[in-house]
Image (cartoon, rainbow, N blue to C red; front, side, top):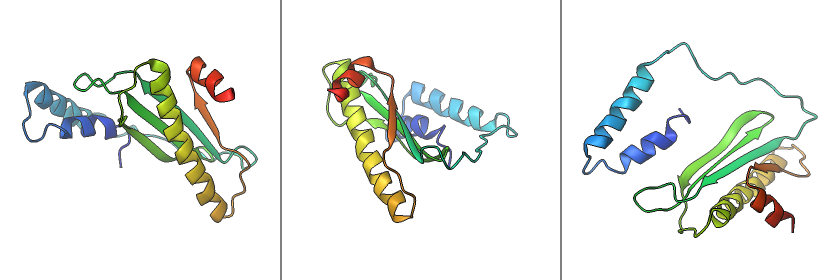
Amino acid sequence: MRPDLGYAISVVSRFMLNPGKVHWEALKWILRYLKGPLESGLLFQRQEIDKDAVTGYVDSNYAGNVDTRKSLIGYVFTLFGTVMSWKSSLQSVMALSTTKAEYIAIIEAIKEALWLKRIITELGVQEDQVIVYCDNQSIIHLTKH
């Protein structure tokens, strides 16, 4: 599985029925990327057990889709430093501000965090809390109050 290509392939595959010139160019870019240096890759290292088991990172871009003006959501969760869950997709509703787009994204990530917490508890890993990092100050203040 190649999570680094997941979003690019999902965008190009939306136009499989009737691709235009820009879609063919994007597909050629993906194929050139795959042909690139095969010796490079990701290295996962074990993290200390005394740190938080599950950590999440979430972000959104306001009206990132040029066709529908819907925002894109993206999050990734790690278990002891190793990626175990991620998502990159369009939001199901159209947000009217950056704060609303980020709020929708953080809610999706929190739902995933609660689900992951239940899963790892069933596996015997005790986790009091799941930390989710977000870079939007308005959302950080909104969720604290």
